[in-house]
Length: 129
Image (tube, rainbow, N blue to C red; front, side, top):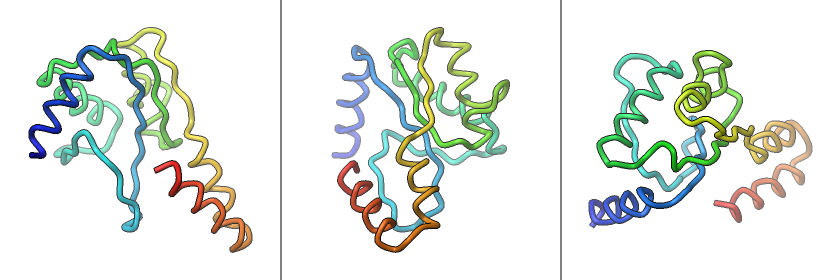
């Protein structure tokens, strides 16, 4: 069943423009829906992440040119000017729009504020997810 869902989604992505959300999380209570998950066998640098990402897209015949935008956290492996995954995407997809995830920014601010504000943000995150 999971193979059928992946196949259906990949066929859809072959002919549709879409955006990416890239984030690394070590929080055990967050559960997300993933297109794929791979173990990085070398390191967690932007080039290594992009290589795994590009290989998957090539294997599934999903054109990189279908990616219109990418949102990520501010980690250097994601947004590094020369070696982050976003810079590799921009080299391969001229005109791709890159933004810093707004919810991630809000979470960074609110986690150090009052418990009530933190609970409010958690509610927003749950609604979005």
